[in-house]
Amino acid sequence: MPGSRRHRTVITRVRVFDGQQVTEPRTVVVEDGIIRADLDTAGARVVDADGSVLLPGLIDSHVHLSDLQALEQFAAHGVTTALDMGTWPPSLVDYCVTTPV
Image 1: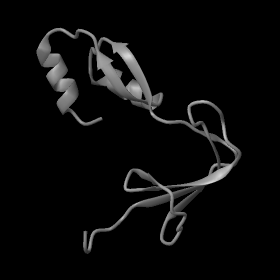
Image 2 (image 1 turned 90 degrees about the vertical axis):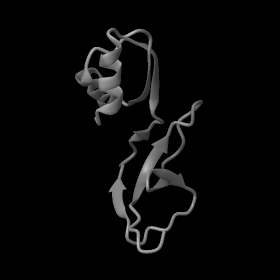
Image 3 (image 1 turned 180 degrees about the horizontal axis):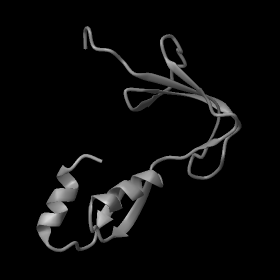
């Protein structure tokens, strides 16, 4: 988009868990929430991971939502997807889904 500002973060010296193993330290670029192959660091916020491990978002496939605090706790522990298995009343689900975390 012309005139829009891109948000680019470069994470250096990070080991990446790819679902099977942890890699040697490398550089990862995230631009507007998308992992990019290009390693252009111009104008980016640079974070030195110092050998830390980068994980994909985790999935909890069986939860019972009770309130917004439950969603905040999931996010704080790296859970980016939670499948609700029966929250009652339905209005509570509506509240959790429409309220930003």
